[in-house]
Length: 248
Image (tube, rainbow, N blue to C red; front, side):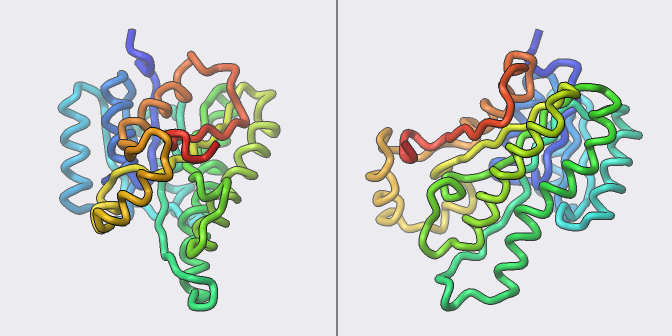
């Protein structure tokens, strides 16, 4: 039996990057997939087709995870379509990097709303369903910079640190109903976002990583599969780094 067979997994911000890898690998592990993104483009429709081709039920939903009412409406549609949600992966996120002296209020608010408020929105939206099921696994995408901080990323670091505090609180709040909540803190993962970084800058990152290489989106997806499966049913309230030993 595949690790996620019979489960429904909801992933936000899944049309590309780490979110896409999570969706594909969870489908390969047997899960039916509901995913969201802010617009229906080639990446969106391509992922829906790819997932369906893996032999599972899959459907994309255009949704803004930073919008409270829109998130609730989307979750209601997903429950109507799939009848349940076993795993929620709060993956939606952006960066708007810059030193604090140059950072605008708009840059701060945008990152906090998309990265942190979205986690509140979706977790609250799926809570009713998971409480009724008396089961569920909520997986929140934090970052190593949410643990250690990083110059030029005060907004991003704050949003990812907030996710960690939220995760630990929800694990304590919902644990009695057999609902688990954990956070993943990726380090330097190769995605479309890192392609714009120069080779020299990448090498500087690699030198800081004990394994001397970047991680791959599949590395994150593999942990999501484990945390979403019954193999991790006594793991909750934890922050697990995927960073090649960089944050130790």
